[in-house]
Amino acid sequence: MKVLVVGKGGREHAIAWKLKQSAQVNEVFIAPGNDGMNRVATRVPIDEADFEGLINFVKTNAIDLTIVGPEQPLVDGIVNRFKQAGLTIFGPSQEAAMLEGSKAFAKDLMGKYAIPTAAYDVFTDYDRAVAYVQQMGTPIVIKADGLAAGKGVTVALTEKEALQALADALNDHRFGSAGASVVIEEYLTGEEFSLMAFVDGENVYPMVLSQDHKRAFEGDKGPNTGGMGAYSPVPQLPENALDIAMERIMVPTVKAMQKEGKPFQGILYAGLIWTSAGPKVIEFNCRFGDPETQVVLPRLTSDLFAVFWSLVQGEVPELTWSEEAACGFVLASKGYPGDYEKGSEIIDPELAEDQALIFHAGTKLKDGQWVTDGGRVLLATCLAPTLSEAVQQARSAIEKRTNANTFYRTDIGHRALLSENTHGR
Image 1 (cartoon, rainbow, N blue to C red):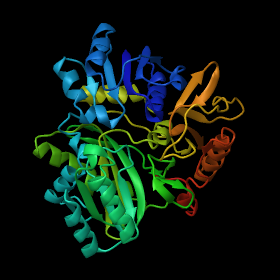
Image 2 (tube, rainbow, N blue to C red):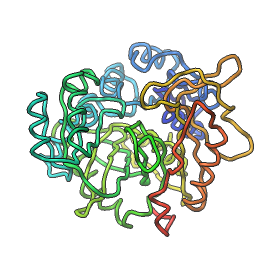
Image 3 (tube, rainbow, N blue to C red):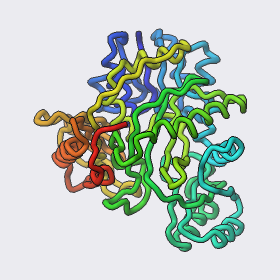
C-alpha cells in the first residue's frame, strides 16, 4: 500500500512515523512535510491547501489512502473533493468538520443534544459582548468562533483582560474572519484532559487519555499556545473517566452529528475538563491533537495503517496500547506564540545518546545545519515504565537540544506527578 499524509508539523511527523512501521505499507508520502521527516516519508512539494495538486498526485502515483493532519484543509472541504474524485481519504467532510470550524456550531449542537459543556452566548457586536461580560463577571473565557491556530482563546481572570480580548477580536480583527464572531463561556474549574477517538460515522473507538499544556510558561502562566508539551496516561483522573466521557460525550456527539445529517468519519478530538459534575466539553477538534498525537501514537502497539484501513472499509479496527507512559516536551522559538525569529542554528536533533523520539515541527536543514523555521520547533517524546521516568527522560532530551534562541517548559506533567499512581488509562 501507498499512503499520503497531508500536513507539515510534528503531528504529521508522528502519523507518518507510525504508518512507516506497518508491514502493509510500502511507501509513505507527506505533503508538504518538513526536512525532519525525510527518514520516515518521501516529501512532496504540494501545499496542503492545493487540493487539485494533491488529487493529481494521488491519481498519478496510485496512492491507496490519504490521511489529513491539520484542521484547515478539513474545514475547507478536502475530504469532499477527494471523494468526488473517487479517492480513499480518512477524515471528516466539510460539513462534519464544522465541529471545529465553528465554536458556535459546536456549542449549539451540544445545547440541542444535552451534551455537557459550559454555559455560553455568541456575539458579533462589541458593546453587547462587553455588557454580557460585565453581567457574568470574571473569570470568563473568550473564544474566536473560527480557526485561529490555537491562539484565539483567552481565559480572562479580570474584566480588563476580557475586554481586551473582545477588542482584539471584534474591533481590531486580530483573528480576521475567524474572530468576527466570539463565543463567551462560563469559566470551568477542574482537571483538563484530551480524548481522541477513531470514528467511522457510527462507532467510536477511543484512544488512551492524555493531557497537554497550553500556556507558554511554567505554572500554566502566559499566553495560550498550540501546546507546549503533553503526556499520557492521566493518572489524576478517576479510574472510570474514559468510560464516562465516552458515554456522556463522545457517543452522544457522534449520534447527534448523524441526526443532523453530518455523519462524522475521522478523528474526533474532545478537549474535556473533569468538574464536580463529571466531564464537560471545552472544545471539539476534527483531527488529531498536536502535541497529544506525539505521546498517544507512541503508546499504540497495533498497526496504525490497519486501523485506518479497517475504518474506511467499515470494519472494526484492532486497537492495543502499551502500559508504558509517554511524555513529550516542546522546544519553541523565543517569543512564541508572539513574534519570533527564524533561522537560528540548533543542535542536531538526532542525538545518538538518548532514546527520545524526535518529532519535527518547525525545523529546516540549511547548508547541512539545522535551523529553526517555526514557533514550535520540535518535540522530544520518551516512553518509560512510569510517568515520572518518562517525564525525567523527555526533559533531559529536550534540555540537550536547547540554545539561547529557544525555550521549553520545565514542568510538563507536573499535575500528574502529584498522583501516586503513574499507570492507568
